[in-house]
Length: 466
Image 1 (cartoon, helix red, strand yellow):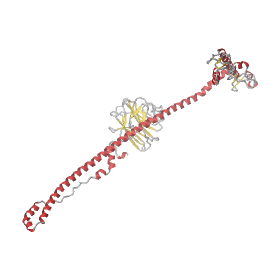
Image 2 (cartoon, one colour):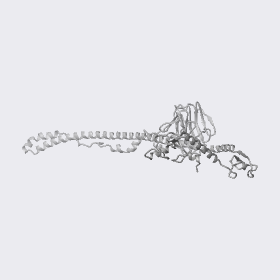
Image 3 (cartoon, rainbow, N blue to C red):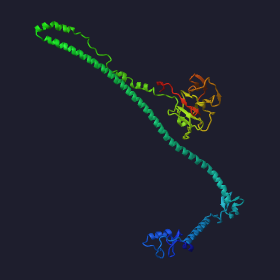
């Protein structure tokens, strides 16, 4: 039940403590919103208590009552806070101590009780500090775990965006390649149809000329025959009188050789249709190239810039790429897209004038995050400024080629356990590793020169490549 003082501070309309109290001319006070709400429901403005009319649309604030209400609410809040402080369930005293042995809050009476005999105690405030520190320490692994999850989520969001970029760029390049192929096929079709029409025109013209010549001969022979036949139908005396002239005229007509059909007059269909698709394929091979190793952009260091055909690489400005597990995050490295675990494989890398490069292979399990090359699973030849070195899983040692290397041939024979490096320009042997390779091996290229590209060279095209 509310006290008398609390009732005096309650609005007659809402029966709650006044909020923004206003006073009417009749001296009754109400919450500002309550009296306005009351007036909206009535035809005239009057006091909700005494029904006296009010001549003011906006009655003045009752400042004294407002301050009394605020003080009362503050006091009540403080009292409720004090009364809500937990008490000892045994002695109804405030819990001011913390028993270190029982790990629970206690009152001063508990401290002296038999239950807590010879126990250690701390003031609640001190014990709370210790517990907060322990809780903070316990919280750190969770905070670190949360940070990791947030970083991975951020990387996933970046990866999702990069997937769309990759798909868009790849689709564009596919369309460009097929556009070139369609253009080639269209040009090839037009060239072959043009050749067919030229042959048709040539042979049709030849036939026209032959038919024209035959027509002339036929006309001449027909005239001679007609005149002679007319003479044959003449009277006996007439034919006898003109016999000599007619015979001479017929005899003067030379007997031509029988006309012959011209050999090769027809369209050489076999030339145009024979092995058509194969012949087109042979022509298409001139615009195609085959590279034995294609670089994998998903493994490339963020500072690596790959060519659109994925055969050459150089260093450049760092790109904002996802830190996916396949990608190198140290040095400028990139792997071939295909790994080898059997058979013989060979490729040539053009290093040109680059002064810093590695060319070799790495094992499939070779670390790609924050590690160095002097560890198992890495074999290569390298140049650092002017020093050529051979790198193996166990050590690194120098070598001196007879001339500056412009190209490196890598020959991998997994069936025989051999990895060889040589200079394809001079066929000079550099080094051969002989061992049993137990993992799948991937081609590797490393460079740190911004304006010098390293390129996988295409091989001579032949049907065996495919």
